[in-house]
Length: 172
Image (tube, rainbow, N blue to C red; front, side, top):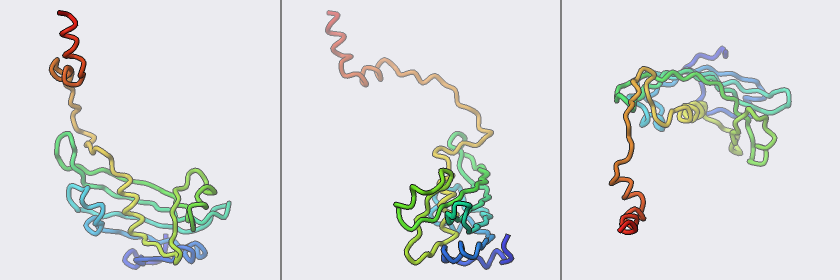
């Protein structure tokens, strides 16, 4: 971990300088500060803990590695109750200057295009990864499974099949 306190994580960093210096930052972000993620949450209570480490691998590929821990308050779509989704992820982002460089990345890397000025926002990267980690349909692990027979009625089947009405004529 970096010797820099969590409150001192820069808002933006020069990715290429951070890679050259092999810098690592550790930080915390309140969920309430994540404006793009907030609308998907039940409420913005809590915070995200993360580290971001810059470097190059044995193939000299520049990367930023994110380690993220959070408990995201979501609404269970089965019970409509609040539950906490634990998120622990590690994502290695291969830093590329243009899309042509993406093909050279190792398969376990996610491509991260870097603007010409080299500037990246660690908080935005963390928020992006949390948005990607959200389930399409949040369901609490303790939610009871809803088991019902949802077989279509005769009327629904007839409406779905435009030739069903013609079948009745054929019998006459």
